[in-house]
Image (cartoon, rainbow, N blue to C red; front, side, top):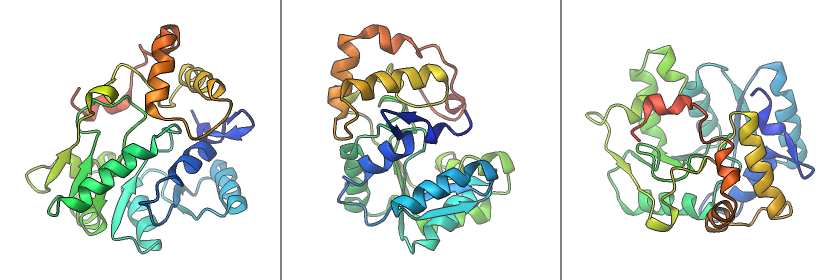
Amino acid sequence: MPGKVMMPICGKPLLRYLLDRLERCLILDDLVVATSGQPENDQIQEFCDNRGTPCFRGSEMDVLDRLLRALRWRNAATGVLVFGDCPLIDPAIVTLLVEYFQSNIGFDFVGNDLTTTYPPGMEVEVFSVNVLAESANRCADAVMREHGTLHIRTHPEIYKLRNLEAPPHWRRPDLSLEVDTMEDVTVIKRIIHQFRGSVDFTLDQIIDFMDQNPEIGMLNREIQRRWKTYRDD
């Protein structure tokens, strides 16, 4: 879905919901939107400029290079990656993973997406920027570079990885909260409308709402996801 992050819901683009929610993560020092230099992403640049959010533009296909250059541009030692198609990310999950990475010295990568236990759309990855740079030097596979941290995630013999599984109250891999299709947009729209366009509702509240309205979750349950090729269920 080209342009999906700028799709308006309740008068605001999905990207704004994502950034507003991430700004509630006091553990983060900085935010940067990393998008491509393609003309269709000019609207993302304009949105970020008007909002005062740093926007880095790089390669369309070499996402690994784009991600690394964006982090170096902001002088980051640790990268925290949240995907643009996850507008309802819960700040508490971001904080949980960053705190684990900081408290467990020696891990190169901490994420919750090596195995799917959280609802898809709640993915967070935390990693050393130096390790990301090393992976960029090692990886010559264009397909793998298109997926950013995939080289790190698929080489546990090189990098020390940790997957954090969801606690019982968040362990709902059956709920798809990502945005890849119009069915996904319908689901996200129903959730945002439920909370009247607010940005401070939690994953617990989303789960409660979805359980009370199971027909909503059925709207996108059968969508085939590209990421399943690279992830354990």
